[in-house]
Every structure is written in C-alpha cells, then in structure tokens.
Image 1 (tube, rainbow, N blue to C red):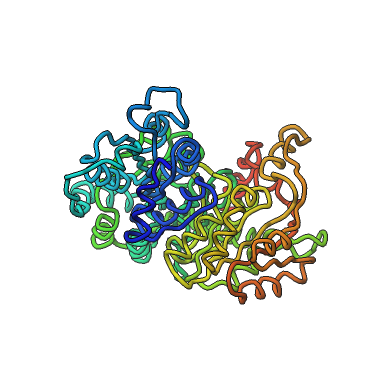
Image 2 (image 1 turned 135 degrees about the vertical axis):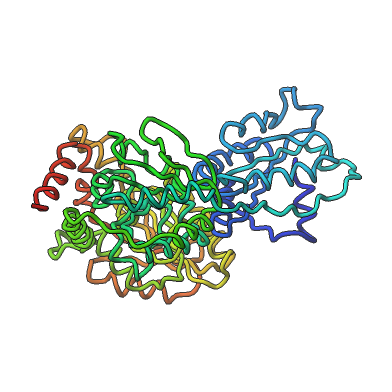
Length: 536
C-alpha cells in the first residue's frame, strides 16, 4: 500500500503495467528490456520485502551492464526511524549494488530524482538505479513541473593520435586477436566490429555476453566464445596472441588472469569508459570514445593484417578443433539426450531473428560455447553474476519488446523453479515462448565440479517434478522428449504451437567432466604443447 498511489495513476495513463508473480522476476524483466532496447526498463514494487526482493535482480543488472530503474515504496517519513511495519532504509540497502540509490524526501523533488535515476542507469557503464518513495511523499501535494527529456550526450571517436598508435601496434604484431566484450556485442557496436573484421581480417573471440557479433561471412575468422573455464580453442588463440584488442570488454565477463596471467600480451582497450586496471589488465593503449565511431576510424585507416606464417597452421588447427567440439557424438550412451544434440537440433530450427534466453547451469556452459548466434543480442546469457532463474523472465521481456515474435528460453530443472511462477504471467500475456527444461534432478553445474574435486557430491540433488503437468496446470502446453529420436519432432511441435510451451528434455550430462578440464592445469598445457608441436 506504500506505493499504491502510483499504481492507481497507471490505471488511467502512463506506460503499460505488467503484473509479475515475484519482485525479483520483475527486476529481471526490466533488466532484459534494458539490455534489448538500450533504454532503462522499469520495475515498481511495494515496501519492505517488496523492495528487498529486488536485490538479486538489481545486482545482476548492475554487474552485467543492463540499464534498469527500480521504484519502491517506503513507510511515511515520520515512521522512518521507528520500529514499525515494513520500515527499513531502502536507499542504504541498494547503495552498494546499484549505480544510484536515493530516497525522495519531498514531493517536489520527484521529477528531478526520476530524471537523474534514468540518466545514471544509462550513462557510461549502464546498470541499475533505485529510488525509494515514502508513502506521504507520493500522496503529498506537488507544484514542481516535470523535467523534460534530457538527450544522452553523444561521444565522438577516440583521439586520432591514439587510434594511429593502435593501428601501428596491430599491424606490427605477429598474431593480433580481437576479444569482443558485452558492449562490443550491442547492435550499433557489433556492426562496426564486423566491418573492421571484414577489412582487416583479424581472428576474434566473443565473451558470452557478446554472442551475436559473429556473422555468417566471418566464420573463418571466428574461434568461439571464452568464459568460465579456460580450455577452449579461443583460450589457446589468446595464449598465442602478442596483441589483444578488447572491444567493450569488462573483466567481470572473464577474468584477465585466465588469458593474460603472465602479462605477456600487449593490450589495446577500446571502450566508452576507462579500463578497470588490475595486475593482469594494464592496457598499453586506451581508446576511449564511442565504440562504433572509433572502430570505423580504425577500419578506414587500416589494411588487412598479415599473420606470422609460422602461426597460420595453429589457426587452422584451432578452427578445426572448434568445429569438432561442436559435433554431437555419433554413439548414443543412453535414452537421454546429449546436450550437443539439443543444440544442433535447436539451431537448425530457429531463424536468426528469434531471441534465445539462457539460464545458468550446466546447460549454459554448453549453450554458451556451442550455440552459434548471428544477431547481436540474439542469445542472452547471465555472465557477470551467473544468476539462476533469469531465462523465463527474460523471455517474457523479449516477447514484450518484439510483440508477436517467437522466443526460446532454456534452463535446467533447478534454475527453472527459481522463476517458474512467471509461467502464469506468460500465459496471461499469451507470450509466444518455448521454454526448454534440461532435466536431470540435480544442480549439475555444482555436482560435476564437486565430483572433480572430491570424487563425490553434496547438497545438489532434489526431487523430480512433472514438467508437462506443471505447464498444463498454468494453462500452458507441456511436451516431453522421451528418447533422442523424438527430439526433432517435439521441438518442431513446440515451435509451431501458440502461446507458452514447456518442453521437458531428460538430458545426458555424462560428458560434463570435459567442460572443466582446466581445473587440472596440465590439461591446458598439454593442449598448448600439442598445438605448438604440430606447427613444425
């Protein structure tokens, strides 16, 4: 009731109000709107637990660069310091996990506070902003006029002198490599990245949140995604590189200790904000400016690079390794479905304009590595916080941003139940979502790492639920894949259906041990030695 005055106004005018079943999921949805549109999504909640339930959603958005503005009710100002119902210091709670957190103390300050929250959420490294409204402030009289829309300042390219120095460093390198990070994967930047790659012929890798920078015509220069575990062809590529151009990269996506731990690579940092310096990330050149504009200047003044001849066989071998790793095994070990079979079948059925959202779990490692995406923001992944439960709320948000467009979301059976109540929201909105549940009755991402460390698991098993009946109880369509042979037909049936669909897929995770080979440092060194020895 502390914020009901705002809800009452929204009954008659203002933006569309989407009622969610949990405040955390409202924050997830608002953040996804922000990621997909580049403009802050908004969530509105009541006081007390309504506000505190936002915390996970807002810290995820703030960490992963998603602009979102959260508004919450609070007790009357006179009750602020009393031990009374739902009294707490909202602004203090959110201060450490947002870019901007404040409580509005006067009704006449509302317009400027809201404007500053939106500007904070969008400026520089986008993230979360929070405003708390005491009940008597929203109900009180106000004479202040609304603040008009403030245009976002437009940055220009980085200085010419630094661009020239970067071009020289790239062209003098034996193996320059491009590492595309999350801001480099945004649509306006990704197109400029593609133009540069086409002309200069640089090999490149993506972080998980930069998925979709790749285009079909750049496959020969692409060496996969890197993140989480250091054992991919892209990791070996970075190990061999002498110059790395990072574009819109944030260290939280993939700690530089994993790809520059010895400090042997010269780094060119291209971003709208200064680099976050640590022992393993100390750029020789910083190109600070509009990402697309800076890239276009580099592209205009550059010629195709010449890779050191001795390293060309390495690139061929790594490209072959990436292709081989992506193929499903020929022999089926059980009646369960192998992750690569799911990915291959899904990729063959969805067009590039379909958005795919991905939860966190073992399935996310498989999807992040092997699900090829050819459209910026076509594959949404939580990489900074790796938050369970994001996939379904993100999918609902994607269906709101692009009405009528099919959306696919993917989760494990563990992560699914973190936000499964929003299936009712999806049904109510008639959202055209197909949600795949990779089912194994275990928090497997934790389990397989425990097995590697301790040769046993602890605290990871839970009971199975009937996904089909769960879907039907909400008014959605439920389907199940009973064997690998049924996979293609069931996926097609789900994609052809109207409204929300849940598909239960019992999954074969027996190959998960290979996802984390880097836990044994010798494994990576052996891969590296093998590649190096094959050069001669």
